Amino acid sequence: MKALFLLYDGYVEWEISPLSYILSVTDCEVETTALQSEVRHSGQFTVKVTKTIDECSGEDYDLLIIPGGDPEPLLEESKISQLIQEFDRSSKWIAAICGASTFLGASSVLREREYSTSIEIEEFPTCFNPAYKSKADVTVCENLITAEGNAYVEFAVAVGKELYLFEDREDELETVLFFKNQLRS
Picture 1 (spheres, helix red, strand yellow):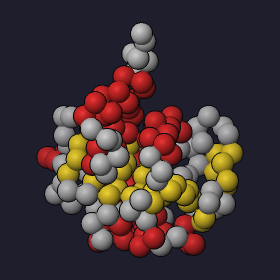
Picture 2 (cartoon, helix red, strand yellow):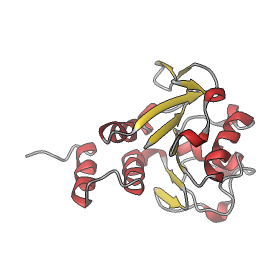
Picture 3 (cartoon, helix red, strand yellow):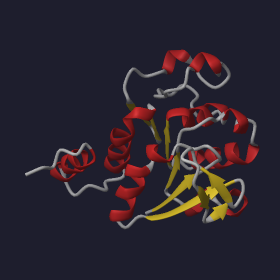
Picture 4 (cartoon, one colour):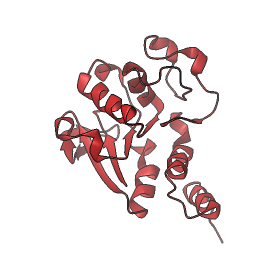
């Protein structure tokens, strides 16, 4: 399994930290991409990506993960839309949390699919159809996994579950308890 994290300036790192950890302990190969070779996340750390988006091909990956943040400056960026559409055309998994669901809408990937987001969808009327907004914190619809930003643990677990990364239900529950700091003896 090979996963690609699409990063951008201002992305919210903690929304994807549990998922990146789960992927790393399940021997999933992880790479990062962005429009440029370095980005600065919301915590103000600079991150050097594995490859720029120009060097990436969706056919090399099984999963695309997009963290939340402020999507507005990049909604017209065709390279991001093209990468998302490439994953969707191949029915590969796309996992987007919080504001990242806006990229899915801007890329015409949401179509008539149910989704979750923390974004005020009224602010992005061309990206979202309110009729398909889920009341759930995490929504799995076809090859899309979307979540509200504060559901980052649930998001990570949902991705892990859909990709069969847990040994069994007990392993899945133990992961939740670990991230919720409830594994005390």
